[in-house]
Image (cartoon, rainbow, N blue to C red):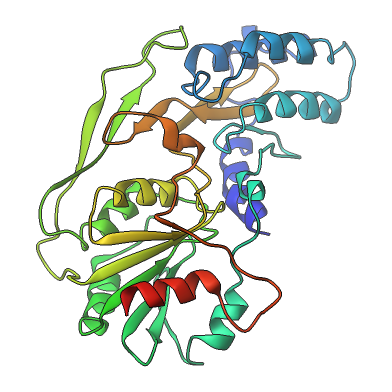
Length: 333
């Protein structure tokens, strides 16, 4: 379900105007034309070939041999989608009015989250829902637990003011970003601005500038400025897993630069490149990463996943507790 929700909004955006954007004189239903167009666009604009050790030329040879005149749309989509999946990047997608291709980074590790375990064993029956946040006191009211399932672009100052005021006397906060597939980057800055006391350099960013694989701009520093109102002063633990992707993975990357924040769980799914795309000659649309987010030592390695400070997994033989959450409670108390 989480993968479907992650991409459902995208199919509405990219297929509602199918065949309406491409110039008529360039439009084509020919399978080879469409595969080569997608391959060339990716070849010139994708930013992580070197990091992912992808030989894009050999991949073209493999997949070009699988297309032929008159093949069905479904078959062509499966070939082209599989070609993009070679990038192992859930920001590399093909969209049609009948399917979406995606790699599935969350399946690179074991499942480490079940909301029912949290509700049954840690929260009260009347836990609060404030905008996109579900939250409650846990550990004898000494810790605030905050669940954020996505970054919807609607995190408001009112949401955060209420939550931080409610838990102002706790010994720490636990922010659960497991299976958070991402969303709006503005939410990341809004959230983290409440957890710092001074302007903080959190990562660097660079963008594709030319057709060669290493044509990238100089790294630009990215800062977060502290919010002028209510902020939280105690320890914060962020829970992550392979389903922590895109904007939530960027939250984990940024948190590496904030000493008061500890990451516990599994390595994130990555997705630190900003995706952009366009339309194919047959009307389908596509996207892939056209930027890189870099660590403070200006390396792109965390695109493959931001590692936790403490690596731990859920033991599914005992559904009465969440080992990752338990470790977070222990670290705070």
